[in-house]
Length: 365
Ligand SMILES: O=C(O)CCC(=O)C(=O)O
Ligand SMILES: [Fe+2]
Image 1 (spheres, rainbow, N blue to C red):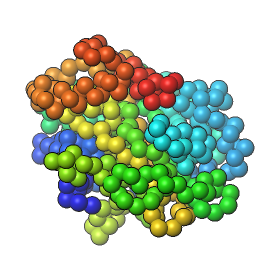
Image 2: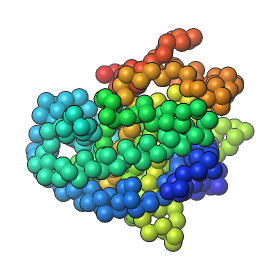
Image 3: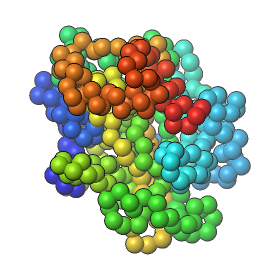
């Protein structure tokens, strides 16, 4: 990875203005940062158990998984349940993704977990606990951003994500990228797609190029299962971009458990006038020289503000100034266009409207 895209590993276990600045700098520069796992907020044992559960779930026969198909009543409605192999394209202009997924909406004190297939239901306490832990980490990161952005109330962002106060678009997602190049995987063909963005090689797209929709995404991956790449500026003069791999553990000699990867989503970028970057990323096969790749698992927590939260001006001089700069204006015009908002349309969106527009523009939902 070139120095320009060196994603820092940040230890936030003792929050301070300096730590807050480190988080802000990474969010402004790369839109990606690693958080050192303190072993407490999200215990490594729970991460391991979640991966174990995910493996057990996805290794079931197709028919068992189809009972809880995404958006079905069985699965508890819209955006919940199982996404089949090639069942979605994260890049609407690209090919179908070579992956399966299972979406679980977070439980709250007033809403229990959605109906789950038996294997997952048996581990409901682990799933609920894991979601709560993920949300707690998001809260800490949002508070650090509030501090570094000099918002008078540093909990400005996090209080607007308070799960006890209502529903949100937050979603917890188990992801499975089946082995390819062998019979029965359902995704045998190696494709030519994806080599044209500067990496020069042939690679198979397992999850198409996209940016995430919400405020923050936490991503858990397993050592020995690389494949995530982000689109990074490689030449400022020509604005040329290139795909850069994101290691699972950037410092295995010093970090016994992989740090947690965090990235900024479109909503938080929009809310901060484009100051925080929502960076395009994708998942490719592990090898650019062979036709097969081994199975891969990841787990994502997509954190969203409460549905009713208005994404209006954040009381931060840094954000306001950025919005008035040429770069900020360009950034916002691009985001508005992507959201299908007319030029000069100054309407304030709620978090739910933002998500609905983003889904509508991307999927025509
Ligand atoms: O599986 C991964 O490593 C990334 C998945 C991803 O970017 C997503 O689901 O939004
Ligand atoms: Fe993503």
